[in-house]
Image 1: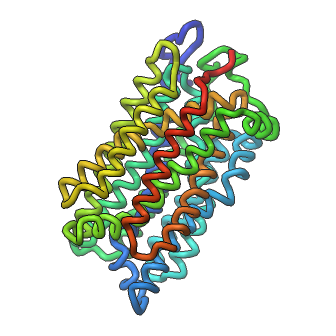
Image 2: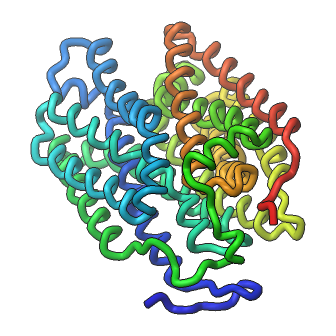
Image 3: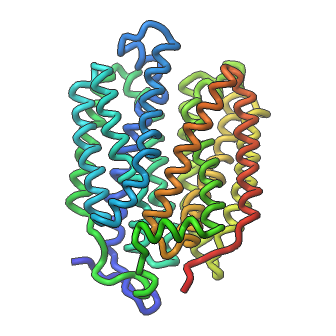
Length: 416
């Protein structure tokens, strides 16, 4: 039975919420690790799988990343419907179980590219059932003044998993471990995380952490219609299309972009370290910015979103102006802390704007839009060829556009 920790106003808040959140964090980190496995070892990976040249090999490895984004695009809406029909525990548990099984099989048969490709399709199916759910954990288990922080911690696991993939994989490879062995270790970890989630996670506390009327959420169909009628939600949907689209595009191309911006002065390992620095800064920003927003006496979200993204755009622009590893790292830390760090507040703003649509519905739409943005921007970037400067100019302009869109929104909170 959940341990009662304290009262939030007149409502009960249970300490077990942290166990549920932790079990969710674990599978979120694992699915992101599985996605980021080959980010910083692209060349070694295509050589291992026997491709003849760099163009063919890089396309084959990039395809694995694109499949993940395609899964989010195709299955985000079905995952939202599943949250309503089957509940948080069963729907997310399905994703966790599929992730664990496919992760283990990818490790056991990891020397065959076709098998890796098929298992990646399995990850892509599992991913939306996992990544679209942080708002469900926050909404079901946490009081209003902790929800942006809970969302922030949920997103933290995304960055942590990616960071491990960016840094640990090349370290293991340089240490003499084979790619198949690395995949097997990651597969065992994914299966272990899935089992822990299935054992520890619970659907909801015995009593909601807020008033009964605020705990109510509309059905998926009704929530869908409500969300698409809310101007604030639609603005945030477009903002997230661009924000996550830029993030996915930048990280998919991080090695050639940083190499190009520095004239080859930063090698792939250095680019991986910059990527990890961005994610660590994003983790810190997620916790700090969300905490400030939650503690705002007026429960405001927009000022934090706007100010942080202005600072983040400055950091992103500095990638084009600074040179060498220290400059790239400084630009990355600024971008990571403020732009990536503001993401949980953006998600919370969208969820409150779409209320009484469920958090699974609102955040599922945002993740759907962001992954579409990633595919679209990657496609546009390919038209520039190796002109990485123009790609960076485009992404900086898009990031600035997001700030302009935020000014069109109005402050919102749960309609009591």
